[in-house]
Length: 326
Image 1: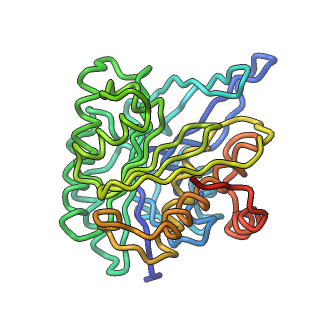
Image 2 (image 1 turned 180 degrees about the vertical axis):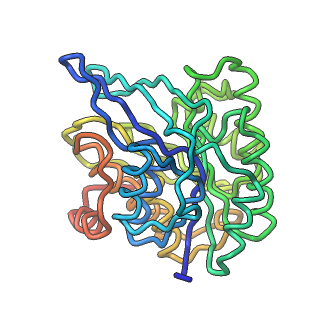
Image 3 (image 1 turned 135 degrees about the horizontal axis):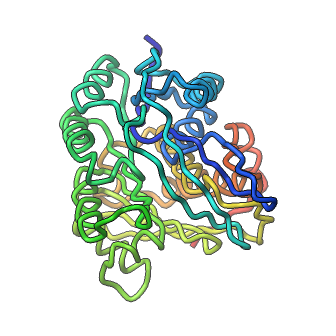
Protein backbone atom coordinates (compact mmCIF):
# COMPACT_ATOMS: atom_id res chain seq x y z
CA UNK A 1 0.00 0.00 0.00
CA UNK A 2 1.09 3.60 -0.67
CA UNK A 3 2.76 5.31 2.28
CA UNK A 4 -0.33 7.13 3.52
CA UNK A 5 0.31 10.11 5.79
CA UNK A 6 -3.11 11.60 6.62
CA UNK A 7 -6.65 10.25 6.88
CA UNK A 8 -9.63 12.60 6.68
CA UNK A 9 -13.18 11.94 7.86
CA UNK A 10 -16.24 14.08 7.28
CA UNK A 11 -18.59 15.53 4.73
CA UNK A 12 -18.33 15.43 0.96
CA UNK A 13 -21.21 17.28 -0.68
CA UNK A 14 -22.38 19.44 -3.51
CA UNK A 15 -22.55 23.19 -2.94
CA UNK A 16 -25.46 24.66 -4.88
CA UNK A 17 -24.31 28.26 -5.14
CA UNK A 18 -26.81 31.06 -5.76
CA UNK A 19 -25.77 33.02 -8.83
CA UNK A 20 -26.80 36.64 -9.39
CA UNK A 21 -29.39 35.51 -11.97
CA UNK A 22 -31.06 33.21 -9.41
CA UNK A 23 -29.73 29.95 -10.84
CA UNK A 24 -28.01 27.38 -8.64
CA UNK A 25 -24.53 26.36 -9.75
CA UNK A 26 -23.40 22.92 -8.47
CA UNK A 27 -19.82 22.80 -7.16
CA UNK A 28 -17.88 20.04 -5.45
CA UNK A 29 -17.56 20.91 -1.77
CA UNK A 30 -17.84 20.24 1.92
CA UNK A 31 -15.19 21.37 4.40
CA UNK A 32 -13.55 17.97 4.84
CA UNK A 33 -13.78 17.23 1.10
CA UNK A 34 -12.02 20.54 0.39
CA UNK A 35 -9.41 19.80 3.04
CA UNK A 36 -8.79 16.35 1.56
CA UNK A 37 -8.22 17.69 -1.94
CA UNK A 38 -6.08 20.54 -0.59
CA UNK A 39 -3.84 18.12 1.29
CA UNK A 40 -3.37 15.90 -1.75
CA UNK A 41 -2.63 18.89 -3.99
CA UNK A 42 0.17 19.83 -1.57
CA UNK A 43 1.75 16.42 -2.03
CA UNK A 44 0.37 14.75 1.10
CA UNK A 45 -0.60 11.08 0.68
CA UNK A 46 -4.20 11.31 1.88
CA UNK A 47 -6.89 8.70 2.61
CA UNK A 48 -10.56 9.77 2.57
CA UNK A 49 -12.56 7.54 4.91
CA UNK A 50 -16.22 8.23 4.10
CA UNK A 51 -18.33 6.53 1.40
CA UNK A 52 -19.49 8.36 -1.72
CA UNK A 53 -22.75 7.93 -3.62
CA UNK A 54 -23.25 6.11 -6.89
CA UNK A 55 -25.41 9.04 -8.10
CA UNK A 56 -24.07 11.57 -10.58
CA UNK A 57 -22.90 13.97 -7.88
CA UNK A 58 -21.17 11.17 -6.00
CA UNK A 59 -19.32 10.10 -9.12
CA UNK A 60 -18.18 13.69 -9.62
CA UNK A 61 -16.97 13.93 -6.03
CA UNK A 62 -15.05 10.66 -6.39
CA UNK A 63 -13.53 11.77 -9.68
CA UNK A 64 -12.37 15.04 -8.09
CA UNK A 65 -10.61 13.21 -5.27
CA UNK A 66 -9.02 10.62 -7.52
CA UNK A 67 -7.82 13.28 -9.95
CA UNK A 68 -5.93 14.93 -7.10
CA UNK A 69 -4.39 11.63 -5.99
CA UNK A 70 -6.56 10.95 -2.94
CA UNK A 71 -6.98 7.32 -1.86
CA UNK A 72 -10.53 6.15 -1.12
CA UNK A 73 -11.06 3.91 1.91
CA UNK A 74 -14.44 2.95 0.39
CA UNK A 75 -13.75 2.66 -3.35
CA UNK A 76 -17.15 1.11 -4.14
CA UNK A 77 -19.97 3.66 -4.38
CA UNK A 78 -22.99 3.31 -2.07
CA UNK A 79 -26.70 3.60 -2.77
CA UNK A 80 -27.37 6.59 -0.50
CA UNK A 81 -27.64 9.98 -2.20
CA UNK A 82 -25.09 12.81 -2.06
CA UNK A 83 -25.34 15.54 0.58
CA UNK A 84 -26.37 18.98 -0.66
CA UNK A 85 -25.67 22.49 0.62
CA UNK A 86 -27.38 25.61 -0.73
CA UNK A 87 -24.84 28.43 -0.51
CA UNK A 88 -25.50 32.17 -0.61
CA UNK A 89 -22.56 34.59 -0.84
CA UNK A 90 -22.93 38.15 0.50
CA UNK A 91 -21.48 41.38 -0.90
CA UNK A 92 -18.07 40.78 0.68
CA UNK A 93 -17.85 37.16 -0.46
CA UNK A 94 -18.82 35.54 2.84
CA UNK A 95 -20.90 32.34 2.43
CA UNK A 96 -23.95 31.13 4.36
CA UNK A 97 -25.27 27.57 4.14
CA UNK A 98 -28.40 25.41 4.27
CA UNK A 99 -27.74 21.66 4.38
CA UNK A 100 -29.68 18.59 3.20
CA UNK A 101 -28.08 15.60 4.92
CA UNK A 102 -30.62 12.93 5.82
CA UNK A 103 -29.92 9.42 4.48
CA UNK A 104 -26.79 10.57 2.63
CA UNK A 105 -23.71 8.71 1.46
CA UNK A 106 -20.98 10.43 3.46
CA UNK A 107 -22.82 9.62 6.72
CA UNK A 108 -23.19 5.91 5.80
CA UNK A 109 -20.21 4.79 7.86
CA UNK A 110 -19.31 3.65 11.37
CA UNK A 111 -16.53 4.23 13.85
CA UNK A 112 -15.46 0.61 13.39
CA UNK A 113 -15.23 0.95 9.61
CA UNK A 114 -13.11 4.09 9.83
CA UNK A 115 -10.89 2.69 12.56
CA UNK A 116 -10.33 -0.48 10.54
CA UNK A 117 -9.41 1.51 7.43
CA UNK A 118 -6.85 3.53 9.39
CA UNK A 119 -5.38 0.39 10.96
CA UNK A 120 -4.48 -0.95 7.52
CA UNK A 121 -1.72 1.64 7.09
CA UNK A 122 1.27 1.61 9.42
CA UNK A 123 2.56 4.89 7.92
CA UNK A 124 -0.52 6.94 8.81
CA UNK A 125 0.54 9.64 11.28
CA UNK A 126 -2.23 12.27 11.21
CA UNK A 127 -6.04 12.18 11.14
CA UNK A 128 -8.28 15.18 10.48
CA UNK A 129 -11.96 15.91 10.93
CA UNK A 130 -14.32 18.74 11.83
CA UNK A 131 -17.17 20.87 10.49
CA UNK A 132 -20.34 18.78 9.97
CA UNK A 133 -18.70 15.70 11.47
CA UNK A 134 -19.06 17.54 14.78
CA UNK A 135 -22.85 17.35 14.67
CA UNK A 136 -24.25 15.70 17.82
CA UNK A 137 -26.23 13.37 15.53
CA UNK A 138 -22.97 11.72 14.44
CA UNK A 139 -21.39 11.41 17.89
CA UNK A 140 -21.50 7.59 17.82
CA UNK A 141 -19.52 7.61 14.58
CA UNK A 142 -16.80 10.18 15.14
CA UNK A 143 -16.07 10.24 18.89
CA UNK A 144 -15.10 6.53 19.17
CA UNK A 145 -13.02 6.87 16.01
CA UNK A 146 -11.23 9.94 17.40
CA UNK A 147 -10.57 8.10 20.65
CA UNK A 148 -9.11 5.13 18.75
CA UNK A 149 -6.81 7.36 16.71
CA UNK A 150 -5.48 9.19 19.72
CA UNK A 151 -4.91 5.86 21.44
CA UNK A 152 -3.03 4.64 18.35
CA UNK A 153 -0.61 7.55 18.74
CA UNK A 154 -1.65 9.48 15.65
CA UNK A 155 -1.79 13.27 15.68
CA UNK A 156 -5.48 14.20 15.85
CA UNK A 157 -6.42 17.46 14.11
CA UNK A 158 -9.92 18.86 14.65
CA UNK A 159 -11.29 21.92 12.82
CA UNK A 160 -14.11 23.43 14.90
CA UNK A 161 -15.58 25.12 11.77
CA UNK A 162 -19.00 25.59 13.37
CA UNK A 163 -22.26 25.58 11.42
CA UNK A 164 -24.70 26.99 14.04
CA UNK A 165 -27.36 28.01 11.53
CA UNK A 166 -28.19 24.37 10.75
CA UNK A 167 -28.07 22.95 14.28
CA UNK A 168 -31.53 22.89 15.94
CA UNK A 169 -30.20 22.78 19.52
CA UNK A 170 -27.37 25.29 19.76
CA UNK A 171 -26.53 24.53 23.40
CA UNK A 172 -26.22 20.81 22.66
CA UNK A 173 -24.15 21.57 19.58
CA UNK A 174 -21.72 23.78 21.51
CA UNK A 175 -21.32 21.15 24.22
CA UNK A 176 -20.69 18.42 21.65
CA UNK A 177 -18.10 20.45 19.73
CA UNK A 178 -16.23 21.11 22.97
CA UNK A 179 -16.40 17.38 23.79
CA UNK A 180 -15.00 16.46 20.35
CA UNK A 181 -12.17 18.98 20.75
CA UNK A 182 -11.02 17.06 23.85
CA UNK A 183 -9.65 14.38 21.49
CA UNK A 184 -7.52 16.86 19.53
CA UNK A 185 -3.77 17.28 19.58
CA UNK A 186 -4.23 20.24 17.22
CA UNK A 187 -7.25 22.55 17.14
CA UNK A 188 -8.05 24.91 14.30
CA UNK A 189 -10.74 27.53 14.90
CA UNK A 190 -11.77 30.90 13.52
CA UNK A 191 -12.63 33.99 15.56
CA UNK A 192 -16.26 33.39 14.53
CA UNK A 193 -16.09 29.80 15.85
CA UNK A 194 -14.86 31.01 19.23
CA UNK A 195 -17.60 33.64 19.43
CA UNK A 196 -20.22 30.99 18.65
CA UNK A 197 -18.83 28.75 21.40
CA UNK A 198 -19.44 31.61 23.88
CA UNK A 199 -16.00 31.27 25.42
CA UNK A 200 -14.76 33.74 28.04
CA UNK A 201 -12.13 36.27 27.02
CA UNK A 202 -11.85 39.90 26.02
CA UNK A 203 -10.87 39.09 22.44
CA UNK A 204 -10.40 36.13 20.09
CA UNK A 205 -6.85 35.46 21.27
CA UNK A 206 -7.96 35.30 24.90
CA UNK A 207 -10.86 33.02 23.94
CA UNK A 208 -8.45 30.78 22.02
CA UNK A 209 -6.12 30.62 25.01
CA UNK A 210 -9.06 29.63 27.23
CA UNK A 211 -10.09 26.88 24.81
CA UNK A 212 -6.53 25.55 24.59
CA UNK A 213 -6.09 25.54 28.37
CA UNK A 214 -9.36 23.64 28.81
CA UNK A 215 -8.49 20.99 26.22
CA UNK A 216 -5.77 18.37 25.83
CA UNK A 217 -4.46 19.93 22.61
CA UNK A 218 -0.80 20.92 22.25
CA UNK A 219 -1.43 23.91 20.01
CA UNK A 220 -4.26 25.89 18.45
CA UNK A 221 -4.35 27.74 15.14
CA UNK A 222 -6.70 30.73 15.18
CA UNK A 223 -7.78 32.26 11.85
CA UNK A 224 -8.90 35.88 11.82
CA UNK A 225 -9.82 36.62 8.20
CA UNK A 226 -7.97 39.61 6.83
CA UNK A 227 -6.22 40.09 10.17
CA UNK A 228 -4.17 36.95 9.58
CA UNK A 229 -3.73 34.01 11.95
CA UNK A 230 -2.36 33.26 15.40
CA UNK A 231 -0.72 30.09 16.68
CA UNK A 232 -0.93 29.47 20.42
CA UNK A 233 0.98 26.67 22.17
CA UNK A 234 0.22 24.83 25.39
CA UNK A 235 3.56 26.02 26.73
CA UNK A 236 2.28 29.61 26.53
CA UNK A 237 3.88 30.91 23.34
CA UNK A 238 1.92 33.02 20.86
CA UNK A 239 2.88 33.64 17.23
CA UNK A 240 1.02 35.86 14.77
CA UNK A 241 1.26 36.24 11.00
CA UNK A 242 -0.58 38.11 8.27
CA UNK A 243 -0.26 39.17 4.66
CA UNK A 244 1.92 42.24 4.22
CA UNK A 245 -0.58 43.79 1.81
CA UNK A 246 -4.29 43.43 1.05
CA UNK A 247 -5.12 40.76 -1.50
CA UNK A 248 -7.88 40.71 -4.11
CA UNK A 249 -10.57 38.42 -2.65
CA UNK A 250 -12.83 36.60 -5.12
CA UNK A 251 -14.64 34.77 -2.30
CA UNK A 252 -13.73 32.99 0.93
CA UNK A 253 -15.20 29.56 0.09
CA UNK A 254 -12.73 26.92 1.25
CA UNK A 255 -10.24 29.42 2.71
CA UNK A 256 -10.19 27.79 6.15
CA UNK A 257 -9.88 24.34 4.60
CA UNK A 258 -6.88 25.39 2.52
CA UNK A 259 -5.37 27.10 5.58
CA UNK A 260 -5.61 23.85 7.54
CA UNK A 261 -4.18 21.83 4.66
CA UNK A 262 -1.21 24.17 4.53
CA UNK A 263 -0.74 23.84 8.28
CA UNK A 264 -0.85 20.03 8.22
CA UNK A 265 1.41 19.84 5.15
CA UNK A 266 3.99 21.99 6.93
CA UNK A 267 3.63 19.97 10.13
CA UNK A 268 4.50 16.83 8.17
CA UNK A 269 7.27 18.53 6.22
CA UNK A 270 8.84 19.76 9.46
CA UNK A 271 8.53 16.27 11.00
CA UNK A 272 6.90 17.66 14.16
CA UNK A 273 5.83 15.28 16.93
CA UNK A 274 2.24 14.87 18.07
CA UNK A 275 3.01 16.80 21.25
CA UNK A 276 4.67 19.75 19.48
CA UNK A 277 3.72 22.83 21.45
CA UNK A 278 3.57 21.15 24.86
CA UNK A 279 7.02 22.59 25.60
CA UNK A 280 8.77 25.65 24.16
CA UNK A 281 9.13 25.52 20.36
CA UNK A 282 11.48 27.35 17.95
CA UNK A 283 9.91 30.41 16.35
CA UNK A 284 11.14 29.24 12.95
CA UNK A 285 8.95 26.12 13.16
CA UNK A 286 5.86 28.11 14.17
CA UNK A 287 6.51 30.57 11.35
CA UNK A 288 6.83 27.70 8.86
CA UNK A 289 3.40 26.39 9.91
CA UNK A 290 1.71 29.80 9.79
CA UNK A 291 3.41 30.91 6.59
CA UNK A 292 2.44 27.78 4.67
CA UNK A 293 -1.12 27.93 6.01
CA UNK A 294 -1.65 31.61 5.18
CA UNK A 295 -0.12 31.29 1.71
CA UNK A 296 -2.44 28.35 1.00
CA UNK A 297 -5.52 30.28 2.14
CA UNK A 298 -4.53 33.42 0.25
CA UNK A 299 -4.23 31.61 -3.05
CA UNK A 300 -7.64 30.04 -2.43
CA UNK A 301 -9.47 33.32 -1.75
CA UNK A 302 -8.06 34.90 -4.90
CA UNK A 303 -9.94 32.25 -6.91
CA UNK A 304 -13.67 31.76 -7.44
CA UNK A 305 -14.86 28.82 -5.34
CA UNK A 306 -12.53 26.40 -3.60
CA UNK A 307 -9.64 25.59 -5.94
CA UNK A 308 -6.86 24.43 -3.60
CA UNK A 309 -3.32 25.40 -4.57
CA UNK A 310 -0.63 22.97 -5.64
CA UNK A 311 2.48 22.64 -3.50
CA UNK A 312 4.55 24.47 -6.11
CA UNK A 313 2.10 27.40 -6.05
CA UNK A 314 2.37 27.68 -2.27
CA UNK A 315 6.17 27.58 -2.41
CA UNK A 316 6.18 30.25 -5.14
CA UNK A 317 4.01 32.51 -2.99
CA UNK A 318 6.17 31.94 0.07
CA UNK A 319 9.20 32.92 -2.00
CA UNK A 320 7.61 36.34 -2.51
CA UNK A 321 7.79 36.93 1.27
CA UNK A 322 4.20 38.17 1.38
CA UNK A 323 3.68 37.05 5.00
CA UNK A 324 4.98 39.03 7.99
CA UNK A 325 5.36 37.57 11.49
CA UNK A 326 4.99 38.98 14.98
